[in-house]
Image (cartoon, rainbow, N blue to C red; front, side, top):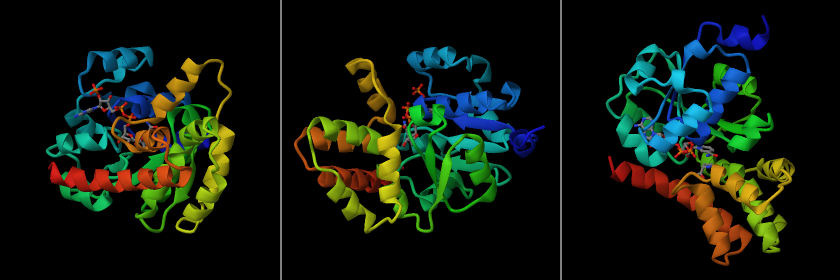
Length: 271
Ligand SMILES: NC(=O)C1=CN([C@@H]2O[C@H](COP(=O)(O)OP(=O)(O)OC[C@H]3O[C@@H](n4cnc5c(N)ncnc54)[C@H](OP(=O)(O)O)[C@@H]3O)[C@@H](O)[C@H]2O)C=CC1
Ligand SMILES: O=C(O)[C@@H]1CCC=N1
């Protein structure tokens, strides 16, 4: 039995939100040897999402959110931040490790809505996870969670201050941002230096981002790569839109950070 199996041997994993990220996490667990019969995924009911779940060979893993909450020992929340209110009445229990992947939504708000302590991660885009080149911020620190991320091949950055999650989130959007900025011939290094003053690991993440951008065979492939990194209404979209409207790289990254903060404020208002 290897280390991965020992770590997860008694666990049942539930992923609420089998969208682009959720399916990637589920697929990666399966590839790591995690048994399919102890893996559940849920979705919001869109036929197109069902088709994608089918393509990912996860149809047999579909469960409803109540079942996921009742049976899972580890739960990943991978719905859009705007869907947070839909999780309000679910029977989460303090005995499972609940991990939110949602950008912007603070741990205080999660605790308020779900009634339990929730850990936060911010993983990099699906392509990086599938290739074993992913990174993820973790807040607050949790040994088991960091070990689980390492099973998924994700390098963990343990944040001391939750505010830094906004900046880290822009960091995981950098591959898409660099691709767009490169085409426009924008200067990027000065922007990274400016943001590094707030978050010391930002330069390291920039280097990571430059290294994970794959070679593309077509514009279509390139577009799809960016689309998969963009959650609708999220941070990548804000950065890409800003670059496309003619902003500098620094302004675009700042708009990404601002979008992450805004998501958190508007989520509270819609509850
Ligand atoms: N994409 C990325 O690279 C990254 C995303 N994230 C975060 O991950 C989360 C998901 O992003 P992403 O995968 O891009 O978004 P998607 O829109 O692709 O996925 C969201 C999924 O949630 C499902 N869903 C909606 N409502 C419910 C519900 N009540 N119960 C269960 N599932 C539901 C949707 O199903 P349906 O389609 O049927 O409505 C959809 O499949 C976001 O919060 C984002 O901030 C974090 C890091 C990277
Ligand atoms: O674009 C987004 O909002 C998500 C979070 C980080 C990457 N994708």
